[in-house]
Image 1: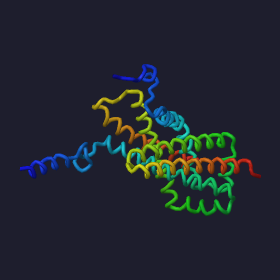
Image 2: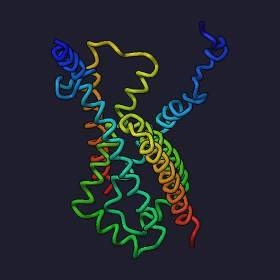
Image 3: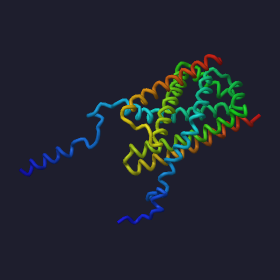
Image 4: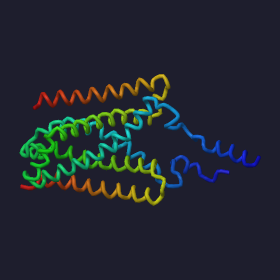
Length: 137
Length: 126
């Protein structure tokens, strides 16, 4: 009898205590929320690269030549555009957070539309930079 | 019985005394980074095709110098606060959390200094 009670209470204790990644499917708002953090970390790594780049320019043409070779390679270009897409997503979702901080736009019906809006904004900003870059180079 | 004075409640300070500072600075730097982020993005896209002479000339242009310095100062501070929040949220071993936060602060202070030093050296060195 006692062991049954213990087993029952253990079963209760082992239940997930909050919405759990393996139990609930993530809605798009949750996916974007964690993407905000992931892009934040990715951008931090990109900033480390920016410091290395500035230091190489300060060191002179020879040091920069190596960095430039890497930047012009397909990997360097992909990293640059990956950084830009991450930056625009983080910026769009960041503005969303600033609006939330004012206490507005928490209504359930609009959450998904705002989430889709962030993705569209990211795409539009990235395309704008792409067009401007082609036009200027 | 609530021992906190109405003044303490109005100031919004908890037992940590300055719990709101980091949160508030994260928002202020975020607002500053909206225009600076757009500026940086449009400039960064041209970088892969820039020669050494072009990039030096670009950094030496007065408005670019001051915008780049503002961007680096603010973005590194914003990044430091953001990484600290992530560590606080996911690392629950006390000593690891403290080591993590201290490392982030020291490393990003160093990187800020390096970025500013490099920029000023490019601008002022012959």
